[in-house]
Length: 288
Image 1 (cartoon, rainbow, N blue to C red):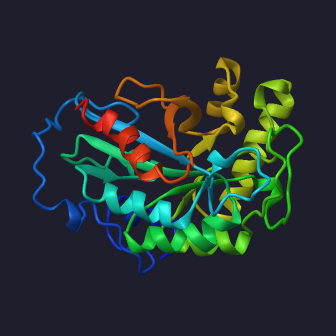
Image 2 (cartoon, rainbow, N blue to C red; image 1 turned 90 degrees about the vertical axis):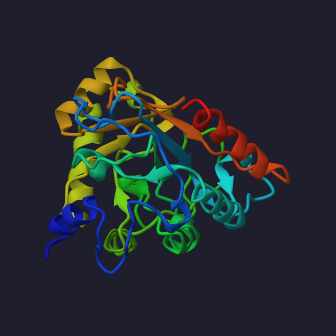
């Protein structure tokens, strides 16, 4: 079976490369949802009127270094484990952009996509085992021009704490375990600061490089720094992306622009972190 075929199988919610993602967790059994009319006309997000899509945005799954300026980019493995453990008790369905693109439907009123920006090495060493523990899929956005590099910093970033980036081998291994990947461009740069030609290079070269590694389509792009405008959106569509992720906080509905999707930033904090995370999610879950 080719990896493209594996993705097709994965989109249907069955076993892919020995790693099962269930469409309804055993933790959710007994939670009854109001019936959704799945005969309603769907949108590119394949949601019906009463459904919402929540996209959680993570970066590091690691303790924050003492000297980092942006501690919110770090969620400890223990905190991340607690997030997934709690979410598995809620009336939600975990999904990915491959599943959404394939038109997978369910009676869950809230769909959740777990995302990780930058393709940091701790996504492989720390996040992956926890995702597998709870049978939760995720989408990772590596900076394609930095693969395999160590102690990387980005001139445009507010925080200059060095970071390690996953390698091609690790991307292949994670994809074989059911993790989806999208583009975070070739460089960690503000897309709108570049001219048309450079924007297209960043979008197309990163997509092509990722697809060569995966032997599958890269469906989505997460715009670094959330920096995007209408012209850049048009170029992302031209490059062949079906979904684009911003850093604007909020939820998504059937009427949302799939190329300018909102996310919920999960910011690492200290002792009260579990309460803060649950408050963030409940605000949206209770609006159902």
